Image (cartoon, rainbow, N blue to C red; front, side, top):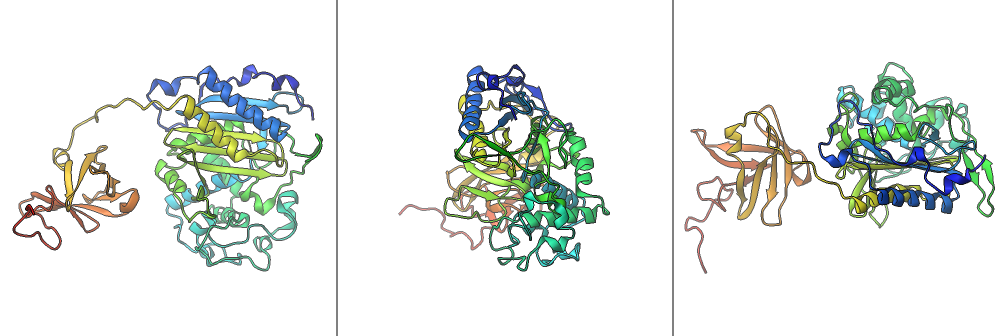
Length: 491
């Protein structure tokens, strides 16, 4: 291993952050000029400095970083060296548990195709696992109560041939906690999910399913189960001396779905754009949003982190980030996405420890947001004809005496907003039967119906039994419990 000294003194020309498009086909293209522009020089310098500090302080043989914004790569940076050269975007690094994010997409695809339900028991599909009573959802959320690691020696540093069958993944106590009660991270749980994918894809290896259904559509040809040249060597750095030791890179076999993948900066930028915007050929934006929703209560007292479906959640700098960190012997990786800012950041290092990789990724996002806050896309009126009857539903409504407003947000979408600063709000999706379904907050999953008189006149809104009328406690409305006949009065 040789560290290129020149790479530590200036940003290589090939890594100066020239913007280029990575929007998956079928993904939306932001219309603001900001989405097509490079970051400002001072922003790029601040990003490079953060990467340089992490590489120097963490004593990583090499590090790479990148930022994706508006569907485009707006910055990349590299420090140190791989095989005597400054690493470039096509150099593979092992990405560890970022693999779980990919496996979760495969499982959600099966769900969206109707081949399984998330509350199905895993034993419905796999007969040779010692925990048939846990659900697919619990496995995805690490809430099945399974042991954190597989049976036998440290699986990340040993050959997968030591665990040839699914039953070999578990020790005498495969489950340590009651299912569904708490978050307890489990690598064998994702090995089981990989086996589930293979079972429902007629025995096709999970890695091949991933290649055909996800990697090829997104153009991620350099994301593989085994390293392919050029790739970085994995190193352990001595804690008290500036010397290194090569780490093994075994094929982990059945444990592969927990952390086997290798990838590149360029490929992970494509993955970041997909996580932000979705791609109907792979997974819808709605299902991606489901992956980002907290699935279990966070552990610990800080409440600054959580877990969705195959997706880590991090509350940092007032924003909720979604993605994953990864570590395997000789490698560290992170990818955080901020959907509100339409921005993602990633970092890769070829060392076992030393670099606070999760913090580095979050800091790259913080730098971009601080130096160049996102410019909103221009407002435009809806296109096409407007449903006048639906338009008439918009405007003020009252739950009791509390004022709200109903807004038309799309062709038939609705949004309930508060006008008093207090109260429950939600967005609603139109259904074929003329009702709407809540998408977030207290009303998520609840049904919004329009109440009508016998002549068809709109009388009220019914939202999960809550009645909204056009006036505060309107006497003519069907207010539960009725309205005092003497009406409003002074005291």
